[in-house]
Amino acid sequence: MRAKLAGIVLLAAGAALICAGLAEGQEMRVFQKAIFTCMECIGIG
Image 1 (tube, rainbow, N blue to C red):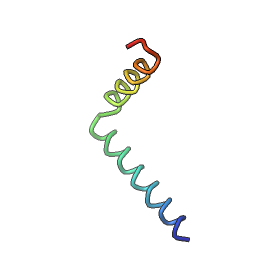
Image 2: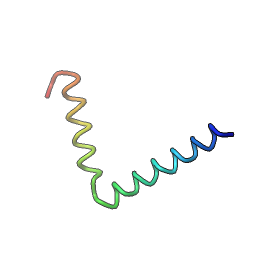
Image 3: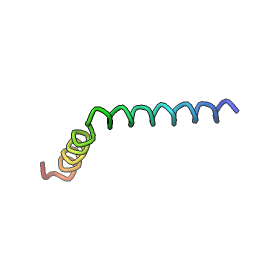
């Protein structure tokens, strides 16, 4: 029961943070950071 509650709380917190990021218009910045990180890992960037 306790693990299920913790999972629900974490899911709700994650959803709230995603919504806050979208409201601030941060999706493109996160996408750019993800691209840069991937390019660094494969040795292009």
